[in-house]
Image (cartoon, rainbow, N blue to C red; front, side, top):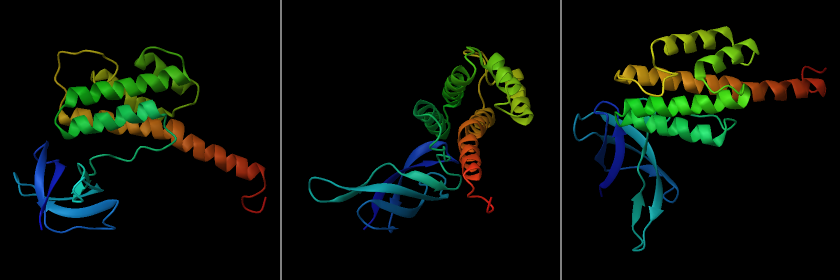
Amino acid sequence: MAHDIIIDCPHCAVRVTAKATSWVGNGEEQAFFLVECPSCHSALFGSSVVYIDEFNNRGWDTAERLWPTPSLAEVGPAIPEAARRDIKDAQKCISHGIYSASAVLCGRALERLIKEKSGANMIGKGLAELKNKGIIDERLFSWAEALRKEGNIGAHASDEDTTKENAQDIIDFTIAIFDYVYTLSEKYERYVARKAGGSIGGA
């Protein structure tokens, strides 16, 4: 029996309803399936939470695309929850072709990071302070400067349209800087703590 699956198609840049004729999973919590986009006929692989309705029928929530290109890139748990929401919402916007909103959400996430780590209220000034304090490295700062000079980050409003490529660049940068500042820093601190405790390399 075929089931309707709602999933984002990256080729059409829209949410589509596809037919899943088969699926794998435990049947109670999560299902994985391969479907065909009804518009462009591309293959889409995804997963969905399974639920049972009031009539004891099995159904699926809106699917998360896993291939091609995951609809939601992994955002580390060490990243603050508010920023995680901004980044995930930005990813959802780009999957629906709302590129300017995606850029704005990433800007908001970056403003959260900068305000917490430097106290600055402007992205450009805050990123410079993060580099001077050694919180981010030269490569991340150079990437940020390139995006800022193109007008992709640091501006709250612009007459320029945000392209899909620019929006993806901003998301990639935002995830990279958060991973660097929070996830990698946390892993490094755990490493240093273990080393100080004599649990690394027999120290």
